[in-house]
Length: 441
Image (cartoon, rainbow, N blue to C red; front, top):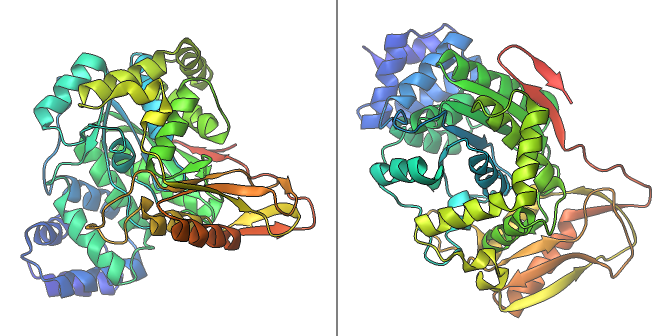
């Protein structure tokens, strides 16, 4: 097999064979194909695309380039949820305990935050003692025992994707639908879940900024997953503003606990219930979405969801005291209000900018080596469409020192755009995508 011939073939817009795709994916995983040739092929794919069969073959090749977790020992139908990334997106910490409390096992491998989006693992590690590093054997036993585990991805999960993703980031080939879809779905397939619900974000803070592009991405991923023999569906949800009000690791854990304890609701709960209901349908515990939502709400109101979160925290070495008293979570040294500079209506938000503000405070990483400060971040007091007066708080900043707080306040003020005219609130859920259809909601 000749890599130059493969590059030439895709450069001319022709479809690659399974053997050709397997060859360059194996080369990416092992390092036997040099980066400059992989980069050339990625650009050819970005410019000329891949058909449905090629995209499926690329996904499967990346899935099998490393470890594939076998969940057959777990009774029932193990399910998972994956978000394409956002700000204040704490749905996993709300829906995973609720779904498990409804009797459907959740075996989840999550990632860390990098860039403007937060990472579930970083959030969980703000709980004292919580470990996300479990062996596959312990992971499986925990799901068998309590129906729930959230851990980090194994080091050898889809190694080809790690190489290709790093190259895409520096060669301006990130915005390729087949490359995005194969990257996400290969990791989900390698993680072993039988039923997978995708949360595909759309809007200013999302990978895809328009609803149509987000639906196209969702369709591509769902088709790949179903072609690979998994039961996969997707919701397209809004990321024109932070989903939850809390942004930052311990703060987002606090909001999830407040939701599970029944102290708060809002868009975070709404989206979590929609996603979780579909997980129950895929897991065979509900015949349809209304029944799934009713079961999720029952687990919420009975306290079973919060009890399941406590159970997972204990099983993974953490201190569950935070579930009863959220002040047991890390606390910031400086807490200051971020006032509105003028009166008017919240017209729009620079969601990426808000995520970057939290990152600059220490809630996220610029590089993989950066150390997270679990206590810092901010709590949004407004959403798009809200009317505010000058001096009223847009957010409350939780910072490590006064200088960091002042910088964050100025940044948040720049990220929130005002209008003198009334503005409608954002639509939370735009579409449901299955292998057969797109239902606009």
